Image 1: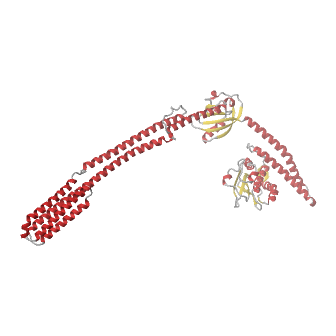
Image 2 (image 1 turned 180 degrees about the vertical axis):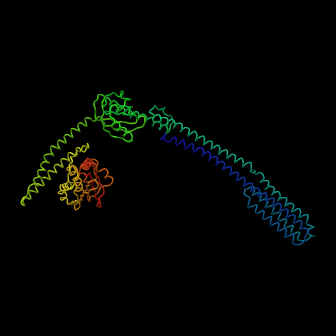
Image 3 (image 1 turned 30 degrees about the vertical axis):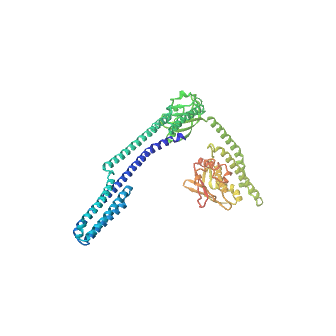
Amino acid sequence: MRIRNSLVQQGIFVIVFPLICQVVVVFLLCGQLSQIRDEQLKITHARDMISMSYSLLLDTITAIFEAHSDSEQEGMVGVESTHKQLKIIENEIETMRTKAVSPEEIKNVTAIQVSARALIEAMKWVSLQQAQGIHHWRKVNDKCYEVVNEGSRNMIVALEALVDQQKPLKTVDGNDWQSYIRMLFAVALFNFALALGLGYLYVSRIVGSLKLVDKNRQLLAERKPLLQQISAHDELMALDLAVHSAEASLNAALEAGARLIERAPNLICSLDNDLLFLEVNPAAKKIIGIEADRLLGMSVREFIDGESVALLRDAQSKKQESKLEIFLTRQDGTAIHTHWSVNPGEAPAALFCVIEDISEQKRREGMRQRFLDAVRSSLRAPIATISESLENVVASCKFKESEQKSRVDLQRAGRSARQCILLIDVLLDAQSAQTGSIQIETKKVSVAHVVEESVELVRTIADRKGVGLELETVEKDVVCDPFKLTQTIVNFLSNAIKFSSEGNKIYIAVKEIDKFVEISVTDEGPGISDEYRNQIFEPFVQVPGEKAKEGTGLGLAICKQIIDAHGGEIGVKPSERGGSGSTFWFKIPH
């Protein structure tokens, strides 16, 4: 887990460390900005307090001046003017008191308030003295002057104390703000450079290791020795280790493959575009009779004929695997039957071939086929003679009314003989179907007679299951193997009966289409899906279901080989009469 997470941890560090630095700087700058804001508030407050102090001083002087001016007047006019001005002074002092924040300010404002009240009381007393008339005022003028002068002096001293308290505060000018902006820009630039530097170191470390891994990958693809393992303690080391492990596994696999090729009994080789041998395994000595090293550079044309060369060229152009059977002439002049598995490639190796000697296999297949043909002839000949004899007897004899049972028995015996011949063909064709060597013996017969005979062969099975058979035919002579054609029709009918239910019907139709005669069998069974319609005529392919287990999977494959041997076509499609059934059909030339 440590190795796996190391690159992740480094990446997180590269991202988080500059962010932490940025957050710290922003936090410090926020503190500085908060301090500046507090200083600004204090300066604004000091300015307000000084302004109010000066305003209060001005209003006080104004009040004293008005009181002095009113000394020349008589009555209550001067008194009212003085009282109004004193009221203004009281309001201003109250405003100053509410705005005082620090204990020192509160103390100074309180001193101002006390001195102001004393001055106000003095001014009120002076105004009362003025109200008694000019003669009285001249007597107390000096006394009033001393009282007002004393009160004014005390108040001015208190105001000066308040103003002096505000003056030591520093002001933040434009140069300070520019300094802070430059500091912020410098810190941001430093963090950007730091992040860029860390990212470059991180990426360069990864890219350097990846280049080594990629170089090892290229060397592995070229099957060359790899570079030394990288020493990074992270995922890249594990990746490089995987490449080295792949090299070891590949070398082991190549060695194992080389041993298999060396010991393979078949000739494994590659050919270039001129069909010259590029690579050959030791089996060349066994197949061709020439040592592998001597065969290199020789042309395959020296051992096969022109038609086989054309087959190889055709296999090369198909761009897919081809299976060929070619007669090959060995170095000693003997010809052998070989099977070629050919795969096209790219230059310089244009073809990869696996050549197997199947001469002995073909010899055994020939012996088996000759044996099967002998068995067929030995079994079919006497049974066919019995069948023809029974047909001749039935056709030539005139049976009396009392002898009709004998006539039916002879017909049944003849039908049973034909069924034996059909069964022999089915059994032997199952063997021949694997090699595609089904043989036919053609003659001119009535297609209607062949179809009717096939229907009669399965009628007993159909009646026993309760399935109806309906036949629609035309009279037409065709050149065919009647037994093989009967075998195909019976196979269609047997499958239709097997997949039909009681009460269903099977429809057999014979049609003449252009130069062909088409025979079709339509059932009312479950039908065949599109998936299996293209596969059902291949050997051992069966439609899934319980009843599929009753067959071998070779019947329809044999039918296809029989129709192909007649030069016809065969297939299956959805029921021509609608519903869920299927229609099996074939057509042969007439």
